[in-house]
Length: 320
Image 1 (cartoon, rainbow, N blue to C red):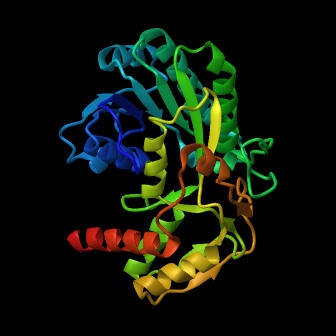
Image 2 (image 1 turned 90 degrees about the vertical axis):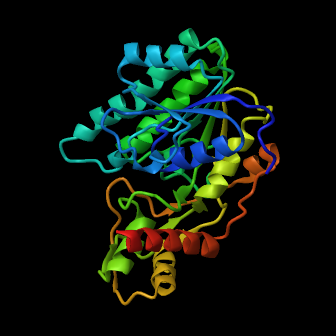
């Protein structure tokens, strides 16, 4: 991948999370000045060794604090990765609908508007959505198709995408939306499928999978970071939406069996029959637009990516 051409002052919202921490390390390696915005009380363990980054405690719903941070950092680039992915399931009382509006929609719009007023230096904002925005739409997903979200999380992500496209011509900076596939790799939370299964394998515990036929587009974290860094220099029009994925569907029961074999675990994979509310059976995208506009394509295949991830979790497990 080509390196960043010049040192830039970059702010990452959700910067202490899984994707944000990997992105921060890459941007630092390329000589950029990196600032990480995180929620009060958030987990800082992924960036505890990054003494050269500046941490900013801020809830994006706190507009006055957000303005203070933006005025202090004066970012040239913002990567907006913050969001609450734990809102994927629709509870009977519908409480997560309101939560998704606050956590994902209102917080994002606060950032877009505040940056427009308080960041004269800002030239580009890259915002991360996800393939879940397409929901029950036909696969492989393409950027031009109508979204059919199935959960408060995916519906709120669609809303932010549309708000950002509406605002794009009126903002003082360019905006791009990336829709990543399901990302996996070292340091991911055990609330996600692959690290959860690896944890069960290392502990010798049986693992439940919701549907044997569920298919997903899986992408190793390093490949996503490569794409995000390419966007710094890509001369794309404001408002573009770009899928970032492997371009193929993996049956998750097969992926699970592969992980169990790779770890050498003696556990049972207990397969359910029904999808949970807020899930679709097939979720994968076309990555042709990313290849055409960015010259990007995945470099790490599934076998290598899974092995790297297993090795990293095994190393952490041995240290505990």
